[in-house]
Length: 188
Image (cartoon, rainbow, N blue to C red; front, top):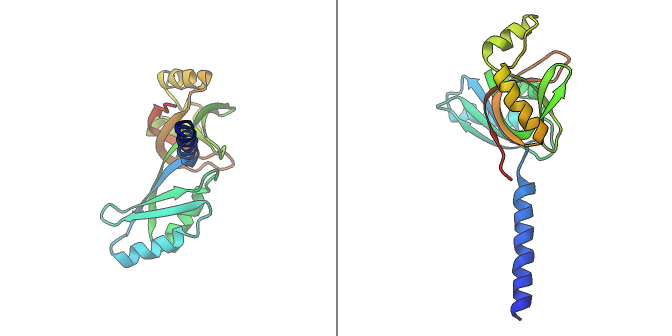
């Protein structure tokens, strides 16, 4: 009887642990900074538009801070232009998009990129607003400092997953850019 109980507890624990690890979305959070949110009716109108964005599953709006938090569905690459369209259609102005995601560092022809776990969505990595602005002005610069490039290279070479938080910006014909605010190793 004791052996049967232990087996049952062990199987339930394994199922629970697998549910925890597989239940985590690779894009953990999308934060939209929105100008013009003034009342609950405004927030409701924005939420209705955000619900139509493919690949999203949950919404929370902070009117006082002018922020909308969006959760993505698992294994879904998000089209960030859809967020801009939804905010505009709701009658507001989008100031910025910040994401927090888990993935790995990969090499692209354009430089280092962050590949989101499971969905495979990629973001070109940038450090500091000056490098981002110079890069987009057509200057041939490295988007990352040598120090950060070396740190990220070590994570890439060892295959260590990272959680990166940063600001998204579009690129014509390329993967979106991700201006790194912070990053950390994801412990297994």
